[in-house]
Length: 438
Image 1 (tube, rainbow, N blue to C red):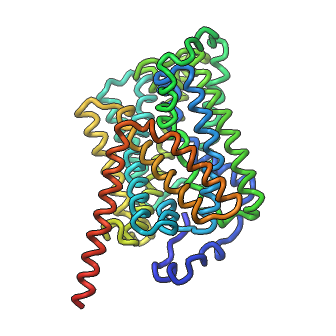
Image 2 (spheres, rainbow, N blue to C red):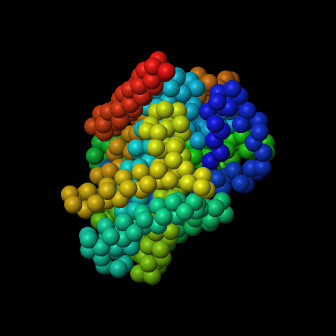
Image 3 (tube, one colour):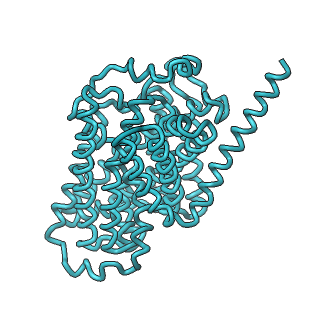
């Protein structure tokens, strides 16, 4: 995440940050960054959940989202190289359509990221609860502890280093590969029929559902100006990363279907662990639990850090409360960290009181991410030129194709956008009134 310049300096020289960044990222590093950004906790839950939703036809949803990743990542990379800023997608939307649209995009992404941090610790806790035989109360206690670790780390200004993040992604990749390979003796051709037991519309629902596993292409966008050879390495790194992620995701999704380790919330939440334990024994379940917790902590750490900085950027641009610009002596946006952390902990408490699970929370953040991508790609189609503009337009069309399957979660997403617009309008009106009185 690049350091943010004062507003006046950015306004005076909007393209200066892109020219001042040091170009140090090589092709292997770029591939590692993309794989690290996308491989996360979602894949520990979603293979089983998607198969339950659409049956074997869920493979089509996995393939659609994987292919969408290439034009999305390329568009975000070019936008990030041209407009590096902590606001990310909100900055691109502001450049293309004005501050009001940028505020709506920023709020949607921030709320989606905050809700996601309710889901991720529940995923990790599910993998711990199974081998330890914990009940529901124990599961939520473990989830709260998993969430508390990255909150405390961010408040102390600690973040996962580049090498540690790479190690985490490698760990996830090995876990997924092992799960697919050791389950081969349990694969049955009969498990693939009927192919679409819940109808073809369920595939569209799964496309939106699986966005949680594929979100992250935008995370590398702000580093586009730091590639040594952006014209060559950005497209190559995207294509190679998409290929790696697609192979891993499709392999574990196919293994889940072939071994039939799905069909209920209990099975869906630990499908990868069940694949491992069925092939290697109970010890593999413990290994999967340890890896799951490490991955979840890393995922939460990254999203809290990024979300806090997005909140800072929105407040800086008068699209969020001014107290979100609060920094400590290390430059950490502590107000944003506390806001996201406390929101997620309260979400866990509500889930425990009302008997909710991770599946309940998935729909809204996925819809918010999809709407963010739609507006981000629309911004790319307006701001970029040549082939990059056509890629943004292609991504926009693919995202729009998934929009009808968002269901009822579309309406609360619109309410969040409306709240952002209302807040910005009120704050702008108050600022103008204060200016007229002085």
